Amino acid sequence: MPLEKKYELVEITDGNIGALFSLAGEATRNGYYFLQRTIDDWRSGANRFNKPGEMLWGLFAEKELIGIGGLNIDPYSRTQGVGRVRHLYIKERYRRAGYATLLIKKIMEQAAQHFIVLRLFTDSVGASAFYEKLGFTPTGEYKASHFIKLPGKGR
Image (cartoon, rainbow, N blue to C red; front, side, top):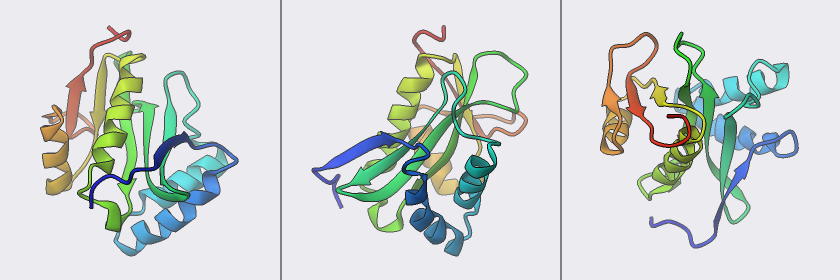
């Protein structure tokens, strides 16, 4: 399925966080619990993606939330200027159509304005291949499977 003609990247806020429930349900049925954790952390205040440089985006096709992706200051790094890709998820029927690439490029664009390195963790072979195709390098660092050095203001 090619990219929908009408899609919009929107910052997730208190006003639209409820849209994540349908994605969280699908993700949980497929063994991915991080979307429910995203909702729980938002509600508790543990992670609201509101520190400098952070953001959580929702990707809408028409009015349907079809994906999310976030950027945090990396809580596992002791080095200043390290960001972390968080909670990237695309609804099953929209996968392999360029939506994940769209989201990660937006995350990387935002990250380059605030960070010098962007890290992430995945234990999925398919996700690893996806990130490596986008320029991420595998790493054995603590709580990170991949990283990329960023150009931009963070440097």
